[in-house]
Image (cartoon, rainbow, N blue to C red; front, top):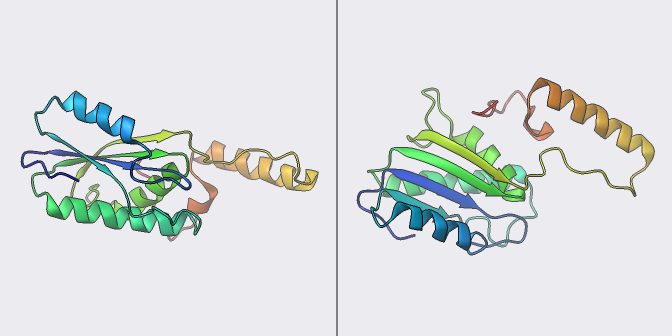
Length: 166
């Protein structure tokens, strides 16, 4: 990640299942073009989950949170943060957001600005191979979750802070 001395906004891109740091290259290039060479935008294509996308959302989110903290510490001019996740990366980003959020409403010392998900499997999708009873249970859980708060059922644990965006 090239360091921009004047960068005030960090945009973190998190790839999905089996992805790597180049998976969102087109989006990274488009964001950097929007900055127009001003150097105010620092785009980080996260690499902490490369080759490690099969060990769960919590571990992936923890690795992403660590990467965001490190980037924020390396670049003291940063003031705000946006997280962008693609597919499974969206779940990592959501979990990382919960880990990064502090009592003051900051994430890694930065003001959260945007949270973007692309093709996020928040609730999952029906599989025709599953027994009917499992479909019914899934529908009830999905209905409960979507009517109470739009978050992944894995984040309903009281030990995890609610997401920043309800």
